[in-house]
Image: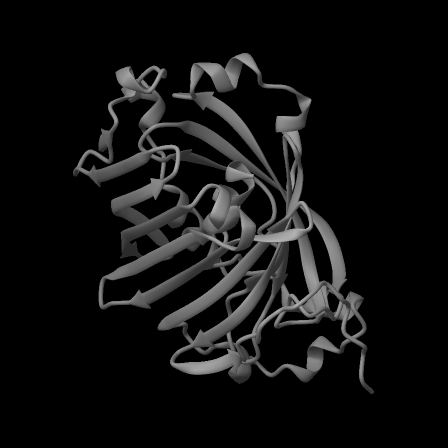
Length: 301
């Protein structure tokens, strides 16, 4: 589950997708969307998600982002919920910043702190002018049963959060659910491979603040270096299961945001839904109330 949640956290700020193909195939007329309504710049965002596994809520997480004059500032927070919090409490907070360079984002800093029943961990990463990230981690890698990632594998990489923001800034007529990103999180080096699945519907449900047309994408993670030796020794086909993300374009914005995700882990699968969203200080999706049980919501005419 930790791996599925890691991927999900990275996708809280989403990928820009072509409005035409996604919504036309879903039964809407893309011509009804005027260019003026799609050019609003995202200056700030506050998103909430909840992840469920083994039939119960397991994780709540939030992301906030703000566009500065020359940088993007991003923050994430995650904590266990429900019975999982009682069994193995875990919290994680993160901060990242990237320099805006035309249509690209150049990572500047990436910090993650976590505190859980099994361990307390910290990653602090900075980028120099040569583009090579330098990471400080606790516990050190030599005490964490893993090898250091060699410098030649770090060149040209980005942190997980900046990788997704960089995709979010790619505007065009084709879905950006293609290609790969080289990611370094301070301990592990891996590639994320993207593939489009196609238009889909997010069904009404008491776990989601959004229902309606979306575009479904597939993400696969490829381990490269820096992984825990025990993890690699027990690595199997179950760890090759893809993560799926459903993306939606909020009215008036040129970015697309994730509203649903599904991913597998060794004990089963996890699903997550967006629970609230505020864009440019305006509410897009109202916060969900208390969820008593799993039940689909009835579609209303």
